[in-house]
Amino acid sequence: MTVKIIHTADWQIGKQFGFIAQDAGAIVRVQRLKTVEEIAKLAVERRVDAVIVAGDVFENNTLANDTLRKTVQAMRYFKDGKWILLPGNHDPASAESAWTRLERIGIPENIVVATSEEPIFLGEKGLAVLPTPLHRKHEVRDLTESFGSRKTSDGVIRVGLAHGSVENVLSGEWDAKNPIATDRASLAKLDYLALGDWHGTFRVNDRTWYAGTPEPDSFKENDTGNVLLVTFENPGAIPQVEKISVGHFVWHTFDNPLHGADDISHLAREFGSLQEPHDRHIVQVRLSGVLDLASRSALDRALAEWAAKFHCLSVSEENLLTEPTEDDLDRIDLSGFVRTAVERLRAIQKDANNPEHEHAEEALRRLYFEHVSGETKP
Image (tube, rainbow, N blue to C red):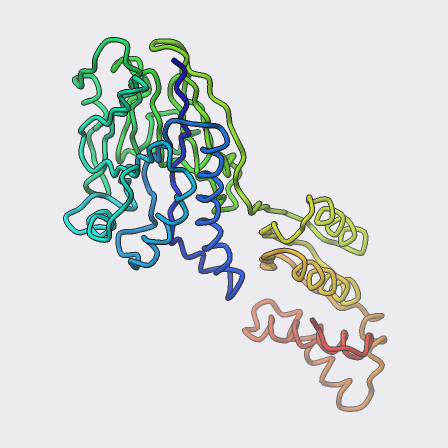
């Protein structure tokens, strides 16, 4: 009998995204719940038997009860199979946690919180899920060693469910906390080991995968925004694993050296090449180089235009300098004491050791924009 599950992890409901201001940040937080709804709808569409969540369902254990209720509400579309939720390092199953409060609030029968190592059976499907919940944020021993001693009947599909770091497979980013042996699936005779903690989709081996977070949450390029549809034809057979994109927002980083109008046009073309609708994109751009005031004014206009189109545009200008030319100053077309003030601002701006250096640069940019364009600086 064919068995199908969706493997997901690291929802981190309640993550704040403090660097994304005001309404834009609130929308990103709410989107994580909407993506859970999409997972539920996908589970119905693909007729899966269970959705297993490999830890870090919640950002922490102090979330408001209303957030816990909204999470359960987001799961409502998938009713014909089980949800199996594993406590991770962000939401460990401690004495008083999000999980104990969920139990008091009450959850539907098809949602199972795996706060113990007790196997969870889908008897009619011949599937056993073997969880290793975290009861504290960090463990120094490999909790998945217990998989080998957990007995199941012959002919049962054995799926391990864990949250931690597989040794020496994540490009030098292995964390010694919550360790997991690379060959755990083989050692414990698992048909599949469903992992959480690493936020990108990652194949460790044919039977061991990280699903990654289903809704991207950082600028790290590690294949986020997916769930895994895992199909088992027979116990012992290699499972079929299909990666399915469910994420809404797309995060990008641009590193652009700027030295004139051509470079600014190139940056605008890069922005324009992103798939529409543009308001699904969260963009950070790191700028470097030297621009005159005319080019800097053009850059400010371009950034203001794209900031209105993207969901969020974060700009780092630490390595971008503005160097006014004589032509720039002539275009301001000032005389008398104002011209003298401009010259003094320019002198301060050129002195990198002057604590007013950045303020002088900003003042010159504003003067240029207002006097040349007749507008205020965006």
